[in-house]
Image (tube, rainbow, N blue to C red):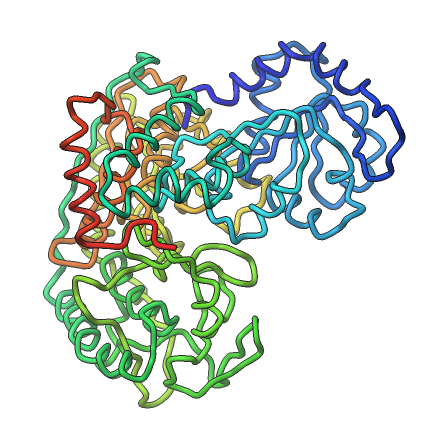
Length: 564
């Protein structure tokens, strides 16, 4: 998160070039067709969004031609196989590696690499995903994980990394249970001590205090719904409370896509409201077409109104409850179930919501056809108005105006904010999931170099990692995310090496809404990260151990920690 991790790895790579050559010249004493050929290259696996950042770092910090760099990605990658043996650094993506894992003839799986580096290593935190299986198949003499947020949803995230690193005795599930999760499940202080010792031994930490960065502060901006918005919100909530009992009595899970859509409706009304024409009967309807959609995993259709009826989740695939629940991974340390799309592996964040506080969920209306809820043209929600007014006050005050980054989970919210900026005649750039690589490059260049471009609009999923946007002095997080580390990553786009101005982070929260529940969940997750010693506020001193264990016990009393 702008702390110099990539620069450290490039320095290490250059420093060990001679060792890499010696490694590549090794030959087994007897020929064995099953033995992989040593390759003296460093394989860097990164999300697609950061592959350009690595190229930029290499060009910025190293002399021309000091490293032979090969980018193994895209439609022409197969033509690069012959060049692999001459490369010193190979850049590829998690997606490319996952596809290569299904092909035994893939060039990435033919070598014993000198070193493999996982950038944004928390991408492999779910050991049931194709990404984790793919990186685990890579053979290498040396392994590194780079991440500013090793704990995303729970302590299991850390152990996915130790398994990849083959860091014994924390590489095998039975040893993890023996030394950490087992003692913790019995409220044993030794489990916490073992966890903290493990992190101290296997990790190199750099905190922002070490870098003498400018000050960063966080300010919470409270938003009050209008009377109309509050009425619509309460209608959804009351239906939610009334119908979950009926739904669960029929065997529906709170991770059912139908229930998830209701949760999403509550969140979206906090952001950009619902259409003024939406009726009470339609207010909980999910996105459908006249034809009942088919599950893209099992081809089942289900019945209209059924809890098993396939619906569209965040990534755009239509999945039924049965398939989504099968893919779910129980993360007991915060009492939630992480549901990943069985088609593309992306996590459906709203499907992780735990309804323990409400003891209820959402059922859909079974009357008539459901319509996609949309925002009326000309309508601006209370939250969008608050964000636009804040941006106008910051960037239209004369002199040399500062710059802002605006993050939202949804493109629809960015659309509404974009319209407000256009009305205020504030020039902006934008990156979301529909942006091509070239469009991303151009938007970043424009924001960083054009003094008249004052705002960058970003979706949290595409812009919270890998971007260097140090021209910004303000970061606006329009809605809270289930994963607080996403928000920390977002703020780090501005507050990082190269920043010369103080940074202010504004977090917009609707009062008396589901967003306050999200904040409570965030605090639980952050406390778990502190217990593991992976956040700056935590100092693992023996005298504070009792308080830490008491905090852990408090979590254990309210949820299942690391349940198998």
